[in-house]
Image 1 (spheres, protein in one colour):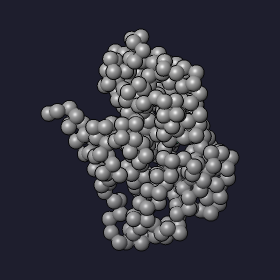
Image 2 (image 1 turned 45 degrees about the horizontal axis):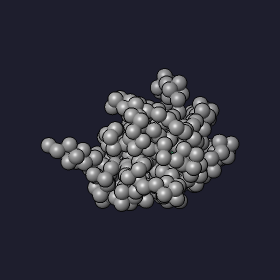
Image 3 (image 1 turned 45 degrees about the vertical axis):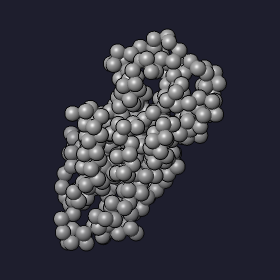
Image 4 (image 1 turned 120 degrees about the vertical axis):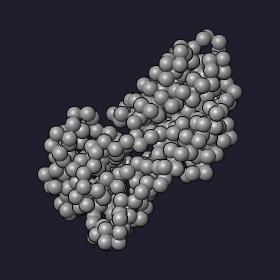
Length: 341
Ligand code: GAL
């Protein structure tokens, strides 16, 4: 079978399966139980494009499962751990039944976990994975604590593969035999940023390509910062830059504005990849103004987090790590992905 058709079929099947996660609730009795339960949700920062999609889906899905809207409290950590810790303390003081937390600083998870365990409140971490030592404690102590998320190594690898699949001849505009790239990173404390930065380039090397890093900057997942950094880099290094890797789509959208302002054309004299599959990025891929992205499945992640919370409320266990898959998105399958979102 044609490889392109196969990969878009696989992508469609993966998304279809993620969109049809079976509801945990079995009957009306379970629904009415959930209607009385309170859920505290802490998001690291509302002003984050991807987490806004995630948050909306999480709330909708919790309501679909039988929670009352009034019993779902969602707090904005405003990218400040002290603010978020106060919000968690307040949720604990209120005696919420379950907590879903997207930590500002994953390094603080040991303290957060201790508070929740002591209060007897089950805890589901999302999006920003705590470190191995922290996750090991949940297992060793058999605590009602889990993490739901995607493995960022996979997204980095997919970004690298999107570029590697173009072939060196298409990429090597300056003919030096190497892929000359700049990297725009998300929050460097976040494993998503660390892994995407590392594994995107590893995928190029694994494909036998020589790589040359021209610039590596931190854009903190933010579109405006992505724009400024790529504008500076293009002003400094100009035509030497052949590929712009961004750890997420928000920064890639900012990068695209900088690329266009510099008179460069994606697909003709430069390439650009992100992660998340924000709708604007998908439109750019369709128009050819972005090379590709990686779908960060906020449906599967939000549903997985809510289902894990419901299992704890029903007195059931969860695995201490619940993983979701990413999906590679290029011009070949972008229409399928748009149709599914
Ligand atoms: C990543 C996502 C980014 C940003 C980050 C926040 O998974 O790709 O866009 O939302 O999470 O932790």
